[in-house]
Image (cartoon, rainbow, N blue to C red; front, top):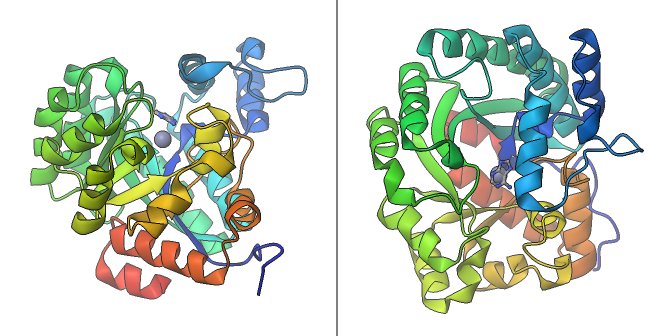
Length: 326
Ligand code: ADE
Ligand code: ZN
């Protein structure tokens, strides 16, 4: 039976979001107003984020983060982001937290910001029933030395809330192997590992992520489709892809959802999951992602159940938390 619209209250598990990237323009404008900072240049006439292409996206993203100053700003941000996700049926969300955008990568300052984020997450769990875990993230174009600091922040705060380490930013800057020290440090601290790869660069980047950084998950990874041997390898090794279809289409990785490889990858047996990445930047929500997959590929409850199980299996949380999600 064909589904018209997936129900909003279908429980969803989202592995790939960036906390600052999930900030609604209204939220950022309010903070800019409170702090008397003029960042009006990053918005269009209708008040949405304005950018063309990936590099300008990163610039606008970084400009928006300049009004996120105090730990209290991050507490409010976290609560607001989780409220929006919960309204889309999300029951568990992992979010990339970058010390370089919250308080700087000094461990003392980072701990204070992290505690504020955790307070926001605890309040959201009580109010909206959504659970969150933090994946501390370095920014590739900020270079390996900064990444080292971010990894130290991650290792020092690893525990019930900080459960993973990742890398975002410009995939064309350097190589995955430049970040070996950071990833070894995070692995030794017991953190789950992921990295953005195969979004802007091709299959070799995905191979490097697995072979050099030894990640169990890949952020995006969708350009693995250019190499069928790699696709088979991902399926065999059960490497989970954090696929963000709306992000890929908005940034022009693929021209439209119809040409997006998510359905082909699923059919080849790759463990795919679905996330929003930076929802307001890409004019998306989890509900819209699901609706698009139903409309374009005919996905129904069976497909959504499959991707939810994939996400739970690959989540960076303990078994008791996983059991409670299914
Ligand atoms: N940071 C936030 N969103 C990102 C994306 N889609 N790719 C790389 N870095 C990011
Ligand atoms: Zn991302």
